[in-house]
Structure formats: structure tokens, C-alpha cells
Image (cartoon, one colour):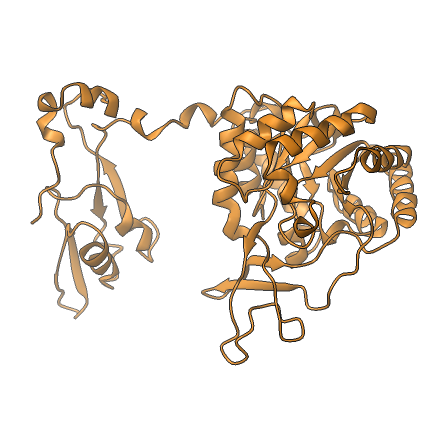
Length: 428
């Protein structure tokens, strides 16, 4: 079987699957049970000056029968005494010396405060530190969390303070609530960070109760914006991850976070540059044992691809990501309908006619259902029909030989008249 062991900036782990800093890592008992289940590492729920949490903390977005497609929370950092947490950190590391124990930290923007908590975390046995520069609610209003991560100079300064005393690798956790995540990532690197992790949760209000008029979750008739995570945020996380992985000025390892629910999600994050992946919402939904399928799935996938180590997978997809203007304008696909599989629902026709490019014809079948056919001459290959079709592989996209060499937008701009076949799509 393929070797799943990884090394993130000096932090060794038996596999790339870590628990993210969140409710599942609130206590030593939870983390030990997670390690027994197979998790390679865990990032302890953020430690700092203990706070008082509110009651009624989570809300979700559900869609088409899928529960917890997105999870919103207004829970803050640990509400347990630091002494208790550090004692449990030491106990976990003593019992599980081969698993990665990373401690998440967040204190006020004060050099001495950071020095003190870093030393205490390392004295307890932490393998590494994760600086929480991403919490989008509660703590940011106190000048911490995303209030730091959104200002590159602050992120750099605090990272520098931590590195003045830290003896273990330092990971900076980045906020997605920013215009361009590359700048705080570069700032973290400038401050001496050994790695970055992303994404933290996204500012959100998941919905409003139409009877009480109070957004969810309801805390005594009021609510507040929270942090959004779960499967719904995965596309945003993948984009931000890849942008940092491709940036030559960052150039440090990455721990990927955001909507990872199974081994396929994990493989995608690793392909786009992550060395480890951190999971939260899926564990809150299904429990620690999901890691068993994640380990088996990733191992089998690597074996099928002929890879001996998960390290061979890291960043393998990055060369395929380019800027839009570098894409081939002469690449052409059109839709193709397998009439033997078509159930005649007509959904593709409606979607194309009302929401896309009017390139599907429709007429009644003998059974009263709808027969659809692709109008090849006007189909632009947008994929919409294949995406809305309820039958797997009924509508597929086939490549068409245009007879033209690859052409980028920059090349087209030099002489548009030489490429008249790429003129504006005519209405029909």
C-alpha cells in the first residue's frame, strides 16, 4: 500500500488527516478517541484568555434533503481554563507520541502575551503551533482573529513575535474574509511562518426565521454573524489554496481546510498543494470514524495511480491552473444526448432555452415525454445541460476538431481579423 506519512514543515504525521481547531478538538478525551479512530493529527481548539460562550451557537443550510450542507457557528475559543488544556495536551502527547498535536493560539496583540502562551504550549509538548488569524466573529471585535489576518502588517508583526521564542514549527491560519488571501500569506512568510493553513470560516448569516424575524441561531431574540464552513465552502477553499500554492513569494507548506468530507475531497486539496488536510464539519456531523474510509480511499487511489507515497500527489494539479487569458479559444466541445438513457423530462431544454444559449430543440415523443436534440451549430459547449440532467452520462460533452491551432486571448488580440471564426455568437 502507498505510504500516507507526511511531514508539514517538520511536523510529522502518520497520515495527512488532521482534525481542525474546532469543537471536535475541545478536550484531550476527544482527541485521544480521534487518534484511536485513525486521525493522524489534531489542532487543539484555540487557546487564549478563556471566554464565556453563548447558548444556541450553530445553524445550518440544508438543500434538497442534504443536512448540514453548510454550518454556521458563533462559538468562540476555549471556555476551559488554560491550566486544564495544557495538562491535557501533555497527557495526549504522552499517550500518542507518533500523532501530531498542534495547539491553536490567539491572544491580544501584545508581544509579551504571545511569548507567554507560546512557551506554555510548547512546554506542554505541542509539536507545532497554529496562530488563529481567522476567527470572523466575537474575537475580531476584540482586535484578534480576522482583525489581524485582514491586515498583512499585523499578521507579519505577530508572527515575528511568536518566532522570537517558538522552538516548534509555526503555522499561520488565514482568513478568507479578505479581497486577496495572497497578501496575508506573504506577510506570514515574511514574519517567519513555517507553514500556512486555510481557509478559516467565512462571514455569514445562514437565514432568518420568518415567524420571529430573528436570524439563526437565535440567542434570546437576537443573533450575530458567524463563521460558515462545511461542504458549501469547498470551492472557495480550493481556489484560495491553489492561489497561495502557485505564488512563488509564499513558497511554504500548506494545510488545507474547508468542506473536506471524504477522501476525494482530501485528494483534491492535496492535488492543489496541501500537505495535510483539516476536517471539522464532517466530524461534527458523522463522528470520528469517517477517517477509516478516508484512509482506505486515499490509499487505494494512490495504489491505482501507481504512486508509492502521498507526497507524489502534492501539487500535481497546479500546472493545469492558468489565467483565463491563457486558455485555448480554439478548444471546442458540444453536448451529445444518449437517447437510450433520456427519460424525456425536458429539463435540459428549459435550462438551455431560458438560462443559456437556446441550443436544444424539443418535440413530443410518442410516450408523451419530450425528445430533445442538440443544435450543433449554435451549441457553445457551456456544459449546463449536462449539469442539470438527472441521469448520469445521458448528456455528455464531446470535443470537436475545429481545424485550428491552440490560440490564447493575448494572441487573438494581436490580430482579431485573422480569427473570424471566433466572432460574436449570433442570436438565433
